[in-house]
Image 1 (spheres, each protein chain N blue to C red):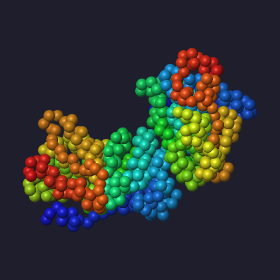
Image 2: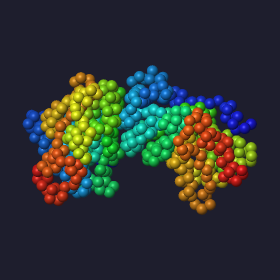
Image 3: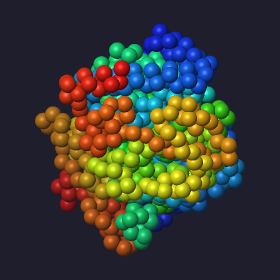
Image 4: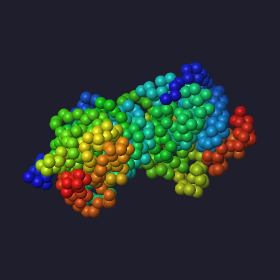
Length: 322
Length: 292
């Protein structure tokens, strides 16, 4: 069976549904949980939340700078605000508000970047959120969480309510298969070991995690043992897992639905490059390096070399098995 | 995080009681004395640090004095109590005026003002809520305070805390689009617990506001965005107190406080170059005399 056919056969899910269901469940037991959005009640999947908690859904209209400031104010008053908007507008339009009002002010706002990456495929680069890792990794004091499936999305929401802190969560729209058990937890600042391996490590995030697992399966058939790390948190960065990957396996591949200038791969490289002699392993960084042409999300992931086949090919190349 | 000065807080409480109990003339005299002391602190801070925003500090000083000494429900020794009134200085470059007001109210020791903008001081050139009690949100980039104030006012209503929210913007700052996004929200949400005060000194960093990107008719514009507009002399203490009364229409309140940039010092007043100019030794002495 080729990896492509596995990809086609696995049932896939939109993480926004799990996000909304978990948020509503928590709001029922914690009246400090509120949601803020920019006319995105439908696209942020907040319709049921609004119906059940009409006073606790604050729709500021199409005004993202105000939206993030309002979120900071709600946190200042003592509430736990989930600020929901399409990723490109949330992070791009309000970047200074995220910097000054959330990260620097340490207001406990949970920023929910809906439909991130290239989920809005054909709508084009204005509607893609592929710069968010680069922009937000530069902000100290802001957690960055990238759940790889619905169960992890629920865990990210639970973490945010249990221990509110300035946080950005990527809430995926592009359908992905389940890669974790129901009720899985996410530990703050830790990668999830999705598969053990000793020859090469694939560090993937979000939509790329299932693809990395398929790549690892096809590599195993060729006798290559690939470790797969799910970078569920980009900030704080799991430097120990990266160091172990470099010291214990022969190479590292990273894969992200994001621009490579300052994203996951750059973060990993900055750790690997500072390791001791003998531990600095070769790397390949898979991701975006130009604005996307027109195409569906699936087409664009292929275009940018982000399929399971691309990942396994990169592993073969870096291990000189090609 | 700096900590409260108990004896200074006690002195502030007693002064505040005298202000509230006094007849209008006594009240104005006490607040004026207080504001001039704050201006003298600001002058010393800026002279010592060799930097700061003296013009805007002096135009907003009377507004801050009235809010902290006669209007707001705050406790310097419990600065994050849940039912507090919130104050946000959106024109964060006038941190010197805020620090001086907070210190004189006992939020932290007055002696701390000597560290203004010194290496590793809590008193940065723009205010930081993580380090300075009484600061509600970090400001500096313009157009940030009003949206945060709107969110805080919505939160206060949801929590039924009874808190009021006061936010001061510069007038030039009203050129930032985010403020108008926030005004639309404030009136749509009927935030009658929100008061915006525009420090209308008619000067911005480079020139007069009306020569740069005119704001007039500011009252009509604010009214068109659904605000209950009040126009007041921003240096008249009793009129300022009256202007801070709660909303009477159910709409959020916008107070246009007509002020003089550099108020209190003859050679600084209403002069564009004193946005962030630092007085010489001789000028500092003269200014100190005029403020005494």
